[in-house]
Length: 111
Image (cartoon, rainbow, N blue to C red; front, side, top):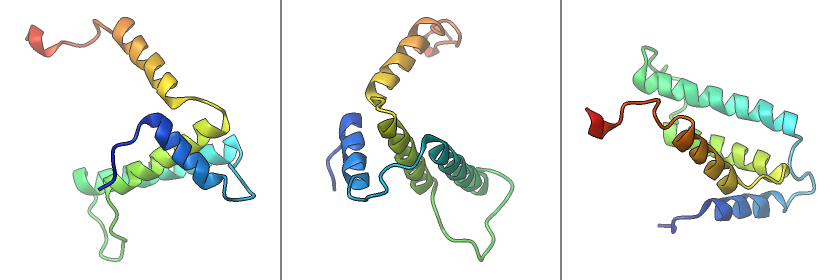
């Protein structure tokens, strides 16, 4: 079993993989198209597992976990290509949720 990786390690691992190839990262627009495609595949799997649309017998067996991994890979590629530190981006989002939205939802201990 592999050790847990930090977000920085994930970004470095993806960068090392992409850096092997002359083509490098796709353009941001191409990656957005790829991300949209991967989100569609994730939506399809969620619909198969939790929705009213069962898989056809001819469809490949994929999992939500696999599709989430694909989405994470593309998001990491997009961030890397734009020199965005995903850990810092995450920290900014959490700060926003913990300040602007701190009273938006009913906390469990308040019930």
